[in-house]
Amino acid sequence: GAVVSQHPSWVICKSGTSVKIECRSLDFQATTMFWYRQFPKQSLMLMATSNEGSKATYEQGVEKDKFLINHASLTLSTLTVTSAHPEDSSFYICSGYGQGKNIQYFGAGTRLSVL
Amino acid sequence: KQEVTQIPAALSVPEGENLVLNCSFTDSAIYNLQWFRQDPGKGLTSLLLIQSSQREQTSGRLNASLDKSSGRSTLYIAASQPGDSATYLCAVGRGGGADGLTFGKGTHLIIQP
Image (cartoon, rainbow over all chains, first blue to last red):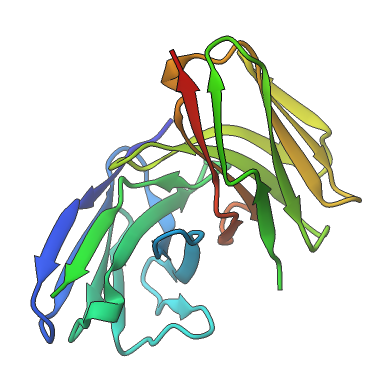
């Protein structure tokens, strides 16, 4: 398999602040990275798809100005939740896909709590 | 829009039983279907991947089947063990590996020792 590292695993922040989540592919080059979120008792929902060096493609209903995604290298993608509010509290998880791989490899996820 | 449904939402059985988890999807035009395991505080572990042209895949005590035309998949777990306790997720891929997955809500499985 392949390893995707995601940090932090848990973050608590005040309303109005910004939070950055990192996703790193440790042993492969992730040409594409995906960001998902999961609200309690709901399914994982795709938020956006990012290809290295390109702007991310956001799913319908996901605010691109609120959820900033950067994928500047083949091993690192970041998701920044800007001006976070309590309704952004959720479980965020990334996955990477790269050459020679036939599936996505997932990080451990980040639980965000906005007070 | 693709929708994935998993039944049951929760299941608790004694150790040693064989069990079946169900997954259904509304759009049969899928590229592949995956079963994942999700443990609390951890990421997703891919258990089985079935390409759209395949009917089933097996790995150890796990067997997954796919009936694309009827929009159904089942995950069969033989001789269940307490270590199998986790949430099992079904996800369908709409394109190649570089496309996002559509997940069901999962089945929360508890195996009683």
